[in-house]
Length: 559
Image 1 (tube, rainbow, N blue to C red):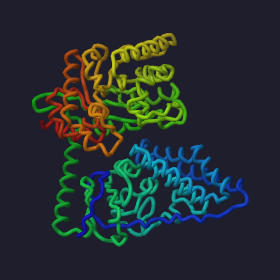
Image 2 (cartoon, one colour):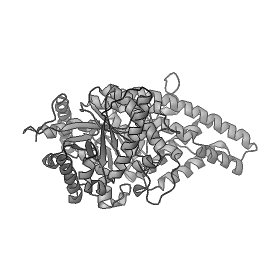
Image 3 (cartoon, rainbow, N blue to C red):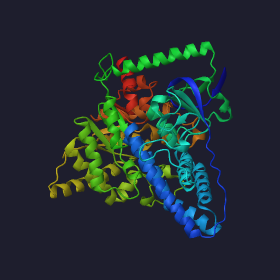
Image 4 (spheres, rainbow, N blue to C red):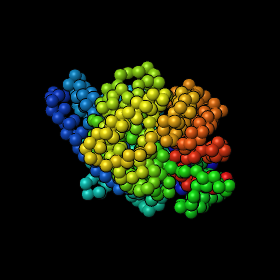
């Protein structure tokens, strides 16, 4: 038995035969050309073809995994259509008089190096994405057919060692896939019914491939590095997606233990499904509202599927992040209204745009900041650019006529900020009344408690709003003075710190003194080791990822 330690990116246990995907050779010859313009035209035509292929891939992924997870291929299309990317490729063709294939590969390496050098782990993961889309363009330029033909058939290079995108070519067996790396487009086209788990030499927890693995419910491990061995093809393996351990040729004791764990996990999942429709209530009768967090309208389906009682955090900034220009009032109204209608009477708490810090949007034209986490972001943008804020508030108010919508303000540090926001909200209400447009006149307003200042001012803030929701991610960052984007600070950024927990306690107590409810919508809400603490502190609501709802309900009901 050979034991390998990697990095867990998607939980679960898989036991089965290994199938190694051989790395595809993307060697490109550097050729000098006589007609740069003709070569630029070749690049543009190939890029357009690649964009069309990604559109087809997006539609296939949407049918398989849902709209929200298919949207990563929209991001890939935007990468290819980015003027900076095209300018880099065409600049290399014009200046160096090189062939388009070599220019695309060179541009991909430049952009990947730029992403890899960024402090944000999320942006570092984009290095793999830009290589993925560039390989697609190179394939077109080299005359290789895409695996996702219009008729849905599998073409040419899609077949690797018996694995084809959209299935297993040679037989009906299911396998654990080992690979040097997997591009998001490769992962999306694997047949879930024929793939037991994924193990890669490279990759990260923030990569789109890792996100897709979690969406598909596949155990996945990355970062095994030099332990990756193509000779493992055909051998039996066990992968533990929770610990990141891989066992090649496991001994009988290891096999027996992991078969037992896998059976227990499946039984536990079956028990959780029986909790649907049950109240989230402790044995002593303490009631907690259990909501879910979403980023896009399409996520509402997962909220309902996992039986959350409402949406405790709709991150509206994703409506801005995934566009190249300002989302209009109509666009936002449609998005918010769709969720409100789908959720019916269940609450939908929508956070106003939280742009800035690690969430940058080009068309906002934000200046460079040495420390953006402490800079111009969230409510600060809204209050200094009210024309942007009012568009969103009008859309939220209009959507409130179609469901149980509440508005939540992020990054609050003072009472004056809340009053200024409410003043702009009243202006929006007045305009809609003048236009005879319906909305909920008594729509609830809440604030996110995510700064030490808001905790200290909680008594005064509670007099201004209807509820508090504690954003533990930023509250931990600001309380402990640890940049949440800096992986080297992980040992110091302890969300279980007594200082953070005391901040949470102070907030809950202030809310209850003033007769309003208090919830948690940060990552700590799903931390089952803290559920007992939160119940003891008297938390009223917990909002977590949809898949965390039933496990959390189980813990609360057994408390």
